[in-house]
Every structure is written in structure tokens, then in C-alpha cells.
Amino acid sequence: MDAHLDNALKYLYLRDYQFMRAYQALALVNISMCRTSFSHSTPMVYANWNMRILTDMAIYASRILAPPPPLRPKTEKKTP
Image (cartoon, rainbow, N blue to C red):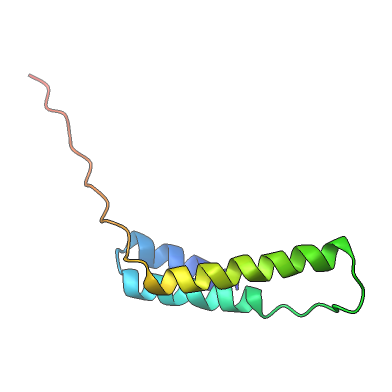
């Protein structure tokens, strides 16, 4: 999963938003596939359930949202 997030960040800096979203979605799918025993109601199970909902929402959002705007190049100040 760390490799997916690293690749997503790399492609964000390279401004290749299609690959960035693909790697981001792969990382989020890996997070959402975490298995938990729901037979025992503990705070950790509840937190994991909330995490699954949040990651599912993030996966959905990453599929429908447009890529971020391109980064602005740094402007050099000219000294007179």
C-alpha cells in the first residue's frame, strides 16, 4: 500500500493525474479490504467500520472528481 501512495504522489508531481488517481484508488481499495471480526462489538471494530465507510467514499470521490489544477510555476523576481 505504501508503494501505491508513493507512486500516486510521484505522478501528482509529474502532473499525470490519470495514473495518480489509479494508484490512489489502489491504495484505498487495499485499505477498505481490511478484515475485522464483527462478532465482537469493540471500539476498534466500530472505528474500522467507520474507516471502511470513509475509504469507500474516498474511492467514489476519486473516480468522479476532476484532477487538481496544474501547479503554477515559480516566478523569479527581477531586481532593477
